[in-house]
Length: 85
Image (cartoon, one colour):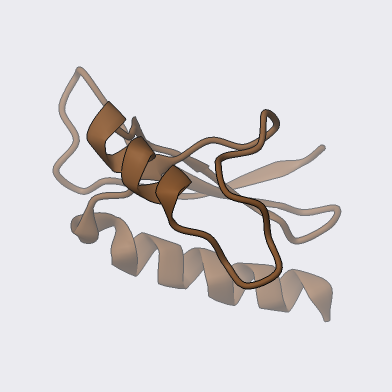
């Protein structure tokens, strides 16, 4: 895996740093962010996408991405598309 740092939360301090990377080998976007609280997890677990079972699979989690990280994620999406070309 060869992760390319795209950016971190511009308002990050010393105790947290939501971050986005792009895997240069397969163009996956990798995100570090805040763990969703139990209320958010419960709402996600209770809602299902058509054709999917209810709940959060063991191999998945729910994260909360701050809105201020959106520009970084846009850049990560652009970088991922360029990696696929």
